[in-house]
Image (tube, rainbow, N blue to C red):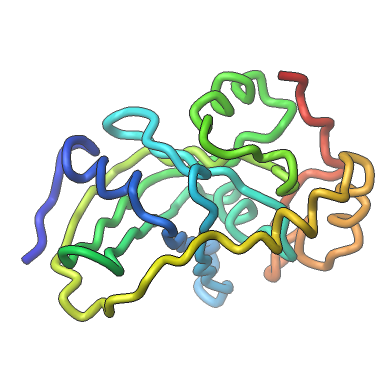
Length: 196
């Protein structure tokens, strides 16, 4: 039923890259801390960087739990599941880090996402995950669902923001600069978007 893989390659890589969405799970070290599970969409916003590393674009939202948990302990699980075609679930368990706009790695990393224009989405970080355990399982109980397309609401909402207004928006949200449990979240003020 389940199989452990040494690398993200071949059919595993093709499966990950073809899915219209995935999920992230993180948690703080505190036993009573808030576990976070988030869906991630928008085609082209994740990429397999190499056989052990994946990354995704972290867009504007109403909290920064994943960023806060990664800054504290780095633990993360990513999951893709097939809603169409043969049943399959792929999980990448690993260590992640948020790479912020002022990081020297930003320009190289952003080049791995040629199929999406991140400018209307309030891009605030690139999450890079190094795999420690790669598994796929059957997914027999995952239902069939159709993918009709990405919603345009996120882009329409955040396209009207520039770096300064986006930083102000984040400053006004309760769980951006710090997590629900008080961990450091997104560093504010937000650094300017690096020139291409």
